[in-house]
Length: 385
Image (tube, rainbow, N blue to C red; front, side):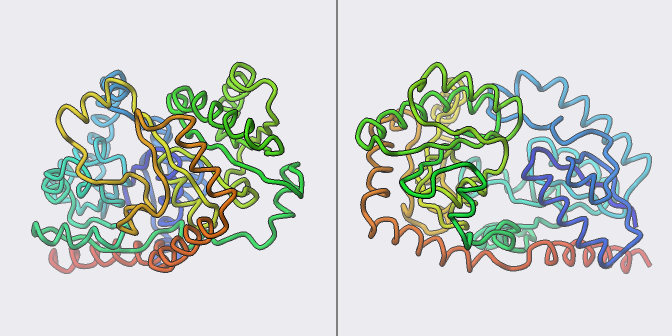
């Protein structure tokens, strides 16, 4: 069995690696080719391009890299049309993958889109683009398949792989020792994102918030995990510029260990909010888009939901405080963090709410996704016979 697969960024690499392993457990000789990160490559995927090729976020940023991205997509289209796979799987990166999926589906290749775009949140008419491009959409969130069904398209809820993989850590003291953090005292984690543009935009704001907190609780310690060595160097510069006298520990990688060791976390909106919820770390969520990207979203009224943090979307209410654009200030975020640090009831309410949501998401997602993909291939082969 030959499977084409394209994933961008680290989250897609994690999903792809789990899916590859689950398919190979059922079809040992399955061959995977496409765009893959290190985890997918380790699982056995031949990478025509590395996953970071697609790692671009924000409307303005994508426009700047558009010629390169289109060239890569043309090359992939030519490759898969010349060597048609039994199924093509596009993992997330909808603005890149859906166009490729549409072309391949028109050529008779079964297509799967893994991770529904947030069609229920903004640009809802994209559901028609997804439905035309993919024979099947694999959804990570339970409220997504009904939205597709309303429009006559097939989507299947497989659960969320992170919910299968993560749970509250059993020994916070051991985590702190491994991170060279004090066993006693309060620790606040800062996660301003995993991309340069995010960290450049949010890093100074998060450090200003830490300064606000430290002025009110001088015994606080702060820890920042850096996704890559290059981001670690950027964060070191930002700390020297914005918080030279503050007690900040920089850690390369180990973001989940940091979440398990911390009493609270200030983090950028994204998958990390789900990780914090699953680990049981009380959180405050913030985000600021680039000025041009925000102007486009606001001017065209593209955002259709009241929240952006995944725990809030799943709960249907503000389970965790979130601050966006002009509301993302050191004072607002600092006060919210201070509440979590000082009010046991507020901490418990957030953690218990997250625990209930985690149970809803634990469905052995890798296995369910693999079964859905193989069922699609089998049904197509049966029709062809």
